[in-house]
Amino acid sequence: MIETVMPTYARNKIGFEKGSGCWLYGTDGKAYLDAGSGIAVNSLGHSHPKLIEALTEQAGQIWHTSNLYRIPIQERLASLLVQHTFADTVFFTNSGAEAVECAVKTARKFWHHKGQPARNQIITLNQSFHGRTLGMISAAGNEKLTRGFAPLLPGFVQVEPNDLVAVEKEIGEHTAAILIEPILGEGGILPLDDLYLKKLRLLCDSTGTLLIVDEIQTGMGRTGKLFAHEFAGISPDIMAIAKGIGGGFPIGACLATEQAAIGMTVGSHGSTFGGNPLACAVGCAVMEIIANNDMLHHVRTVARDFRQQLESLIGSHPDIFEEIRGEGLMLGIKCKVPNSAVIEACFNQQLLTIIGGDNVVRILPPLIIDQEDATEIVKRLDKAAEHIRVTQDA
Ligand SMILES: *Cc1c(COP(=O)(O)O)cnc(C)c1O
Image (cartoon, rainbow, N blue to C red; front, top):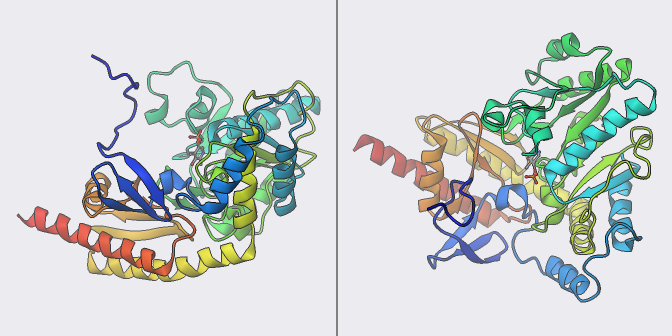
């Protein structure tokens, strides 16, 4: 008989009943070190007192009113996001996929508004991931996501990441926008080169094409900048965010410049729950903590030392690990043995890591992690690698 929860996930048999900082306490009575943050979501770790306070305080006031009415806390979060980014305006969603959907709709509507509705194609990257709606699996075009779900949505074409010539060949009179992740997350922590991003921006400028960045995983301080596109010194026209902004509460957002959002007028888009007071109260608390030089400085400092330790770990296990890539606390370990075996070995060391494409293990600890817990991650990775070697030799 089918499970009562639809069996679409390969779940671990352990669940967690409590969390604190970088630690999770399992139903098996053991403490686990969290180097996954619920897939880059628990940006401030578990049970952060400021987030508990924000949520419970809001819960005692008002939960939901719908977007038929003004939502002051939503306006406050929008202002915080606008203050700290390229954007002039924000649409709130409940998830990442919805945020990218809104970004694509905004780009298409822009050209419709300009009287060029045929400019509706979106260029995306191979190995990218933008969520699981029909629109977003069509956008990524990855067979693993799309198999069995045809017909897909037309209007998306994929090119190889970091290949400017491929974009130049594809871009044309039908191109509305280019949609990229500055570091491909699910794809296996594949960073786009700064120079590529700079040239992509120039190409967009010279052709009028809109640049959409999906910073759902890279954003909210994860890389050591508030948003990863800042490393390349570029600014997008539209940006999707989610994951880290809620610190564990579901919320996403589509940010845009005033120009790019020109078609998003009354009635053009909506969401019953999007920008709900509970979500926005938490979002404000997260923004106030992360969008601040101390926190970003902390991420860069911890990450520098952590990265060095991880590099020497690779040196000690050249038969198990190949390389470390990524930025800040968005790191990937490319493996020489199956990544699933490494993740299992880590789990047995009570270390939680996340699978990624290209045989990568993702290391995405809470941004609040200290030097001691970072060192503990490396120790446990070391033990896991040692264990894999022993089992292989046996
Ligand atoms: C997780 C993720 C999404 C999808 O977010 P959901 O909240 O699962 O819909 C989209 N894009 C990127 C880059 C992601 O990492």
